[in-house]
Image 1: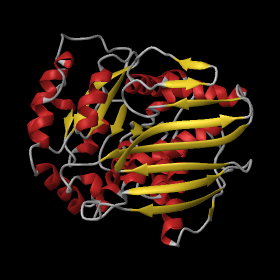
Image 2: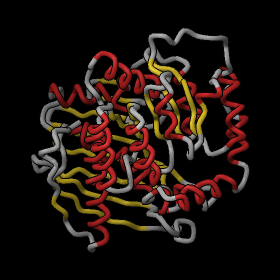
Image 3: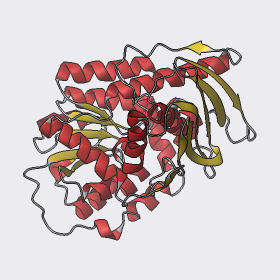
Length: 378
């Protein structure tokens, strides 16, 4: 990412009181509670200390079995002392965006988790790989398929592991849906739909509504969840897509898409429906099969998911999705277990995202997809 883009990001953070709110918003439960034994754990450095790192990832790293918060990377100097105090982070493990590459010398950091605006994902994932660190890249993987390829190539060249921040692949409700599909619990799929949306209010200058930083709007943000839901809810990659876009608040969504609907054609002939929006409330996966049905509602929120089937409700214990996700990736590194959300999965989803945008740009044209050679289904 260019220095101009990074400066733009900094300027956006400087507007209003969002940064100040984050500084004081770290839960008290996460306060430093004495030195812990991390000798058998992998050290994680969070790159970008916005809301997701503050309220989800850092607290989760207090409870993970196989990894811990070992370092931070931030462009806001005022956050450094706050995080250092609350999480017992030594000064030598605190970096900014300019000196980030020196992280290569830090033997206490094994994994770099990139939690920045989408347009910065490729730069920092590649820099992390070149520094010899394993990489977790938050979704969406990048703002183009070309950038996804560059990230994958950099990690392969550096011989480091690459995982996507797809937390749902580690949480029990989603894993149960995958089991239904794998074992054909309800028979062959007949119909499937997925919605992922919320109503965006507040600052119209936030980075998610800035195409230069986000790469797109609702589709790049929430739409990835809907696409993923269709794929693991069917066990199939789509073969074609047709899409539509509309806006009811163009004065607010000046630069990014507000609402997108799309029809994904599956190899069996089933047409999957998705809807994603920054101006509606929806969070659901529903599949109808020849011998019953299953549903998650909500299907992708941080709070515990909820599910039911034609045979009855689904009930699983509550646990941090981020904790489960990061432990899964750490186990992959330490023990060679399956990488449940590899970089190729992020690339696949970006191929579908680009096809949806292309369909809209070309007058709702049907776009063929060739995902069969990627080796990634659900």
